[in-house]
Length: 385
Ligand SMILES: Cc1cc2nc3c(=O)[nH]c(=O)nc-3n(C[C@H](O)[C@H](O)[C@H](O)COP(=O)(O)OP(=O)(O)OC[C@H]3O[C@@H](n4cnc5c(N)ncnc54)[C@H](O)[C@@H]3O)c2cc1C
Image: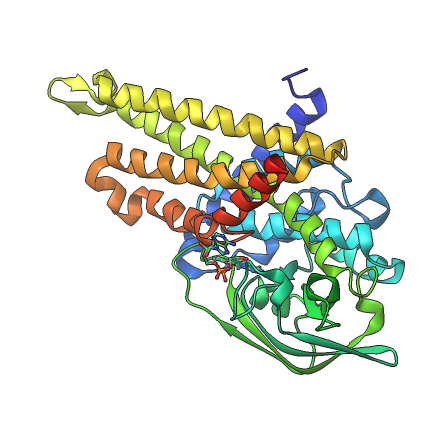
């Protein structure tokens, strides 16, 4: 067992950090305030191979491992603590992975280079007004007629819907192609967000303002059957593969944020005076720092292990990804809450900026990339069988 990163991984981290300090740091305030990540950032991130890093060289990507992608996800969240930029990039990373693994060659040639260079967004459209956890019960239909698939229905809380519409990207969308077969009757289709018959309505969120979530209504949307991913009625399995890998990226982003927030907090308690001491001299605070540092270290190791298992195609990968997704957002929230207490009233102001990380992290507690109870369901089923 080797706990060290390779030279390439260390260089990747350093280069990513430097790139983000120059190209993302100047925009982090405006991303949260104005709700937009500058398109120019994605163009430059694409040129540097970090916007969707699993895409193979032959499609213009940097063909990194899941470990490499997790390192990038961590570093992005350290800079944009609102989580918006990490969410955008981790969706691009995870769903381009699914397209690359299961999509047909025409679609891959058309889309992957554009995703890799930061021009187009790709996300996942699964959740519906009737619920997100119970994927097998989706209602949106896909009727295959000649060489088309006709989509009708509605999706809800879909990340990146507006961005996809604006940059001619789209979503891997789950539709029912056989209503009598539960999860075995679901097909995955790539649906461009600017297709005729699509209506997108943005939701007003509490956080991660730089990336939209929206409802997407499909009214007789005609999609070329070439956009069907893999085999008809296998979409549920492709989506689970995607979620199992996306959860590593989510956990890595949460861990990056936790580390950044804790480091800021430690600097603060080293310098802040109270009752003739520094805050760090009070054991109640110093011990909290020790607990938080330990929690972060634990969950980082868990997340790296799930990236390693993904890179080695382990059958247990999904269990570790679920464990990482279960713990990383909860630890991040705990870190943010405790460090807000260290900052006192200052934390409650927008100047401190820490509040936006609380708003961002909450998306991963309530449901994005799978609700926490669903992670427990996955883990318990695996260990109790
Ligand atoms: C900011 C944000 C962005 C999102 N982006 C996307 C996106 O891009 N694409 C997409 O498809 N979806 C997206 N989602 C939706 C997300 O996938 C869902 O929130 C998630 O799947 C849970 O579904 P739900 O919110 O409908 O909750 P429900 O499925 O209704 O669950 C509600 C509660 O019940 C619990 N629960 C459900 N079933 C069980 C069970 N069997 N046992 C115990 N407890 C259970 C859940 O843990 C949860 O706490 C996003 C959500 C958020 C908040």
